[in-house]
Length: 415
Image 1 (cartoon, rainbow, N blue to C red):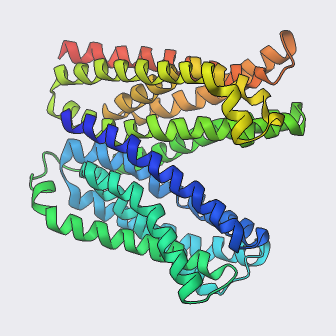
Image 2 (cartoon, rainbow, N blue to C red):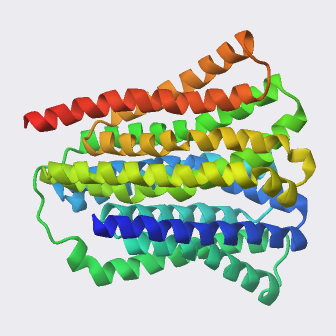
């Protein structure tokens, strides 16, 4: 547990540096690359990322399956097969779409090597998550934006490439560099991370089912945020959409990146290990620590929002975004439930019940839409209705998750 705590705190620090590097790099790119080229590049990367989402979704099921069976050989064999099928599908369908529909005017092989390099990167990042190599996970989080900047500088200034070329070169070389680094680290530590013999026979069908469910569950978390965007676009004006898109959504996303993602990166593997080992008392210790962590983070968020939200928004953006500070303050008061719900979802997954985790996420989307229309039609037509509905959806997921968590805990006590 001590190692897990250290990994989480290091992750918060490293993620902060990573966010700063990414943001600075985007500002830097705007000075040297045309707006059109940047738009095409980020659109292409977004589409590649979404199509490779199935591979990211494997991470949770790999972590849980390895904790229960220790059969890393079969897990990786199945994952490699899915990886190959996914890459071929992207090669055959996504790349032609980018070339002929989106209009990404760059040599065909740049796009091919982009998807190949990104798939290698996903494979190796999933690998270190499965083996609970926390220090490597944190270092890779920082290394990725740093390498992206270095390779862009080499491609643009030393190789004198222009337009989309330096952007794709930096992406390809960064992904391959990360994969090589993880491969070397894994080779050095192979004895310490893969020495146990399989505990039980690996259930390939169950593993694939959990991977698919986990992928949909991961994607539904993204859908929740974009559902809020769609509601704002439909019922409010562009100024209010700008408040949400430019200020509120990035702040909420960064808070999730800093304080929620580490739960899935580090707490989930620990919970899976303890659950498989039947060390139930340690499971309760993690829960108690998560409660303290959630209280501390959300408390600081509330205080900072109340004291500085207005001034920070006006200084970093402009007075025209003033309304967004009120939305941030509303979110800060309920961020506690966002953190706790992430823990509950991780705990439910660690028990092997991926379907329940998915159903809880889907319930969140349904409750978001239902709460919004209830507030909008019967109480207020202010944009705060969207924020309250978003907050309410997380609280509703927390309640449902709590009931499921208690059911699992009762079963553990019986055992």
